[in-house]
Length: 161
Image 1 (cartoon, rainbow, N blue to C red):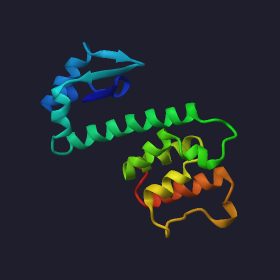
Image 2: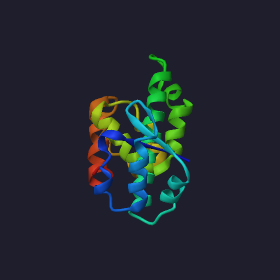
Image 3: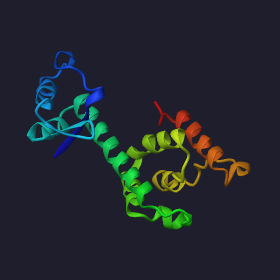
C-alpha cells in the first residue's frame, strides 16, 4: 500500500500524538519525493489503515482525496472539448469517481466551488435518490447556478466542512 503525504501540511514529529505517525514523519525525510509530496510505502501504512479512529479514518480520508484528485485530473486531461455530456461522463476516470461512492461527494462539491464543471451526473449517480434534486427549474442549463445549488445542498446535508 502507498501513502502520499502533502509535505506542506505535514506536522513535525514532535506535534504528532501517535507513535506510528511519528515514525512516518521521521521516515518522510528519507522517503521518495514526487511533485512536492512525500511518497511512503510500507507495512506501517497498512497498520494505519487498519487502526481505530481517529488515525485510521484520517489516513483513509487523505488517501481518498489523493485518489479523487488523481482521477479528476485524468478526467479533465482526457476529455475532448465539444463532447456531449454522455461522452464526458462515460470516461473511465469519471466512472471511477462515481465508483468511489459517497466518499467522493465532498471532493466533487469542492471542485464545484472552485470551478463549476459537469459533476452533476456523478452526484446524481452517487446519491441515487430521485427525491434529491437541488437544482431549481429556472437554473437548469446554467452551470454556475447549478453548481451553487449543489454546494448549498452539500452545506445543508453536512457534506461540506
